[in-house]
Length: 249
Length: 92
Image (tube, rainbow over all chains, first blue to last red; front, side, top):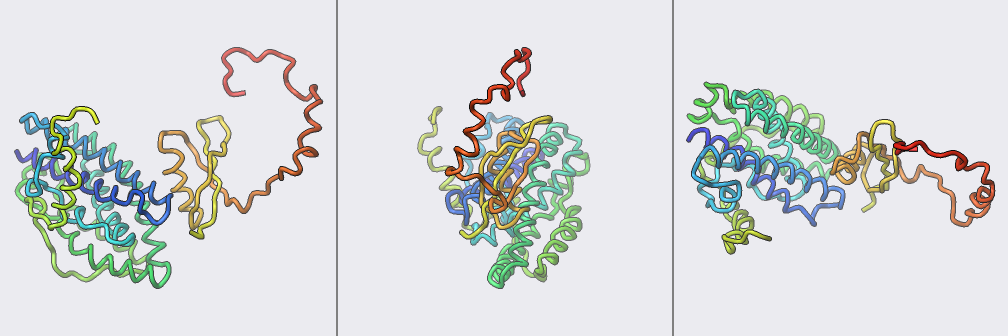
């Protein structure tokens, strides 16, 4: 059950990230960025499919990726709260992508050496994608942070909004302790230092200051979410739930 | 959107030339390269990308079509049509 929980956490992070990013489709500042964000969303969706399929097999209750994505309620989702936060303006999306992307990239780097071969293979494949996501967020962070007074102001505001939710990414608990002990998982706490080093040096390069520590909302890994997740799920799941037996779309 | 226009060239494989595939808008060369990757190599079309500011390209004009290209039409000795192409040669 611990293994199922862990895979679900990874899969839900990617799934909710994909859903949020895809909300930009048709709305991004320019067509080129529209495509870029859609590409990243599709990468995340691909990761979610692999992880949720695996989780379903591990659970052994006959649930496939679709059952896990479309027929769970908000309390059953184990994603971090960071990924469910609304997109906000473009700056907020970029800050989210930066914070989450660097975390995910560091995580997959380590999971590529997981004692579990299947997860290691998924992580190794996903890592090539997350490296690109980080690169995309990095380039925009530099341009917006060190851009106009208005873009700088918006980036600062976005950092204030997003930063508190990054602490949850690095929380250890009994699930990660148990799995890290046999080499299958990574203790999230181990990622904190390399994450801070990468993100903070990039922010400084973009003439931005990392916000000072404040509150640290948490609970996503145990199914406790912000109210925005329910709306996201309603949109994502409504068609599937209205036609639960449909096999062709 | 006032971003400059860039022309995109993709090399589909080793040994082949970069081919013009389209254009895009981007604030600078670095972003243009990223956008080109997202727009034109999503399905594994390339191994290398060039982006060139469209403003840097000097093009022939349609008005000059005749003086530029018509004289070549009747000089068949310039065309490599007098020998058979070996079988199995795809890129010639």
